[in-house]
Length: 143
Image (cartoon, rainbow, N blue to C red; front, side, top):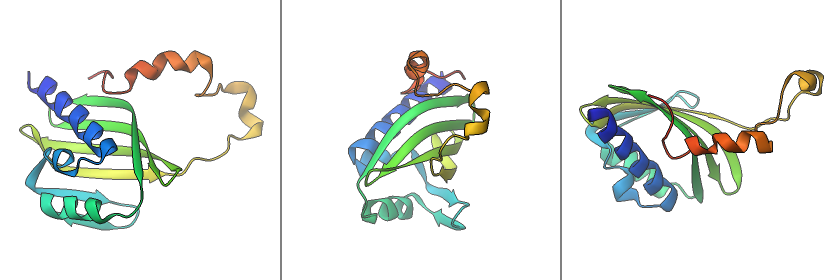
């Protein structure tokens, strides 16, 4: 039952993140939650501080969730975060205490062009064949 509650909270969190509903977006965090950005070496301590930094962030943001996986106290979301039209492939690792986030770590990566030399061994994730996996978006990934 708890996993279902967490998955619902995550779905609500990411939908609120995409719509700009900052109050609902931050309901998922404990008051003493910690958010780490390893690539910039930043740590934000406290739900209020996390919310303030996101509220003041000047870029227009969009979130497209590709997959949510997890169970128990550990949940991972893969999504594309777009700032002012520039996509960033993002992984959010959330550690829960009860049904709220105690610690989140986010990693961001810029897209890059596929290498021509490995073309014969790969298929495009944007191909029509991959469109069937779009059903994972919004949280129907395995747990």
